Length: 103
Image (cartoon, rainbow, N blue to C red):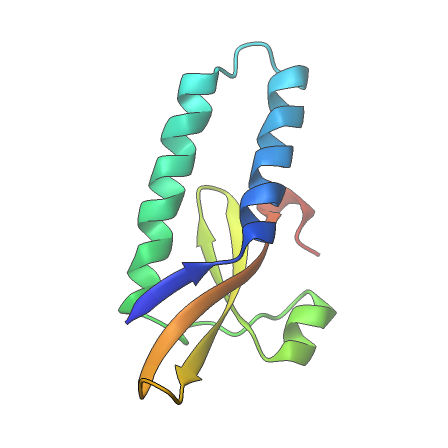
């Protein structure tokens, strides 16, 4: 099963780390790059374990029926979709929020 990550997710993660590097001088670009690489690897595992945990705090995620996945201190919202043209299921990562802001 393929995993697609919405551009909004990349934008939010990059915005978070940009602000974090401005506020924490010990946080380096190399550290952020490693975190993002691990995050992307972790999201690829959704192809094997979709539907494990339904979103339970963000009302808009709940209303959409999305699931959540925690990786590298971020909470990702995703849904399992079906492509009628190919007859295949795929995972679409739709949104993200840092774990400390997840409420």
